[in-house]
Image (cartoon, rainbow, N blue to C red; front, side):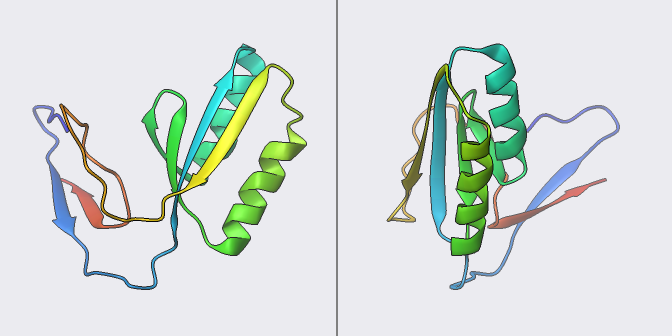
Length: 110
């Protein structure tokens, strides 16, 4: 994460939480700008963007049901949305990966 001249962001690990909600990857391929914007607005409320059309979401059963229900109500006609359960929490990252904004860390802005 970049720092501005007056802003400093500190990343501190949170304690392990064995009861953390499962991780899901939600990816979409939608050609219509209006539909894509609607999908993005819904996903923004449930997770963090990791690529232009990919989100990581920690979802309980109820949260997953709510997310999928909201996405289905959009009636997407110009593409599709996929939701994948990540069965392993061991994620390998290769390359210049931007910092995570996830449940394992708490961020302080000074």
